[in-house]
Image (tube, rainbow, N blue to C red; front, side, top):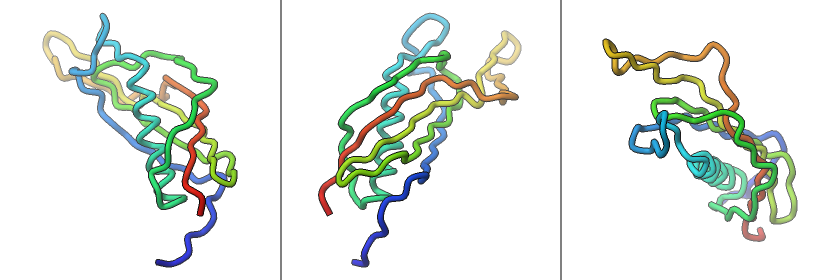
Length: 133
């Protein structure tokens, strides 16, 4: 196996996902905040694989903010950016954007629209740890 380059600040991972109606938890088809946190975990796992060749472990979240609702029928974009590299820790800037939203009507129950400006739904800082090299 060849030597892996050192993790670089600025490395980004982006996932997009449709939010199924089966995840609606509250009135108005709202999805609970834990949904965004699970997406952060998926993006952070990919980041660790890309930078360290290991899935890593999530150690902590800080600065978690739920800024706009995520609803069933949304298409969300989850981004994860590496902002600090320690010997075994990695600090990540995490963000969920709503890029499209369901807009059902009686005549068109499957109607949806791409948003002109994405909505910032959830932000956080996360710390992951990876095995020593």
